[in-house]
Length: 300
Image (tube, rainbow, N blue to C red; front, top):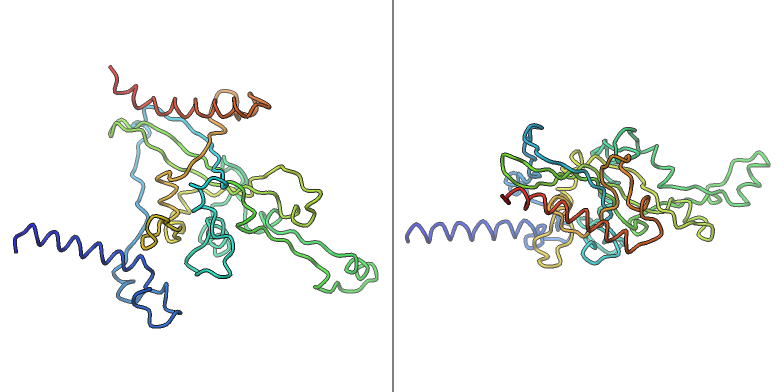
């Protein structure tokens, strides 16, 4: 057997090994409870970590632009970030992006949570629970309270936002030209779920169509948690994709709604009002101008 055949066999072995790991132990499980659990040998062999960002010196950045984008979850290409919303009949290894973020915020695996996209005001889980959970006391509970009695828990209704209530994601990113590599690169800085507040579930008739940014997460601090969580891959179910890979490789469709500018980073709908078509065209113009930067750099 020559060297070429040996290399080919080793390559095939690595692919088959990775595929077996990607199937979450389904082929080696003796009971259904073992599905999704790796053996000690697999855990020792598995050193899967998010691809680290390379260091970029400020002097190597020839040009940059910050953009804010909307990822609409009604679009089919963005479904891996939205589903599954019903987790009653599905494995624990499959969760939506919102469930993954909330779980890791509660477990304190993600602590860099902020109130806005400029990351100036840090928030805790207690701070954001006002938007995520709404408690309402029924009339019988109010009567007990007025009578000086303890309110029976059955008279307190709780409404909690879940993955099905998230309508879109908003991201903030940084486009820059690296003079060392001569490439236009993108670095994701922050991500935020957008939905109506939990109070709207208690009073659907009074709910407005105004959506709010529930919180902003400093993305670099969440990469490890998002890398461990896998999204569904409709092309090959044996090779799930991490949320970190989806977002960093921009495997989604988005619309720019804001860019950094000399007018206080004014949003598009603030200077193009009541005209959705022109707002979309302006978003495409900004996107095209970013694409042309790299092309123009190599034109003499």
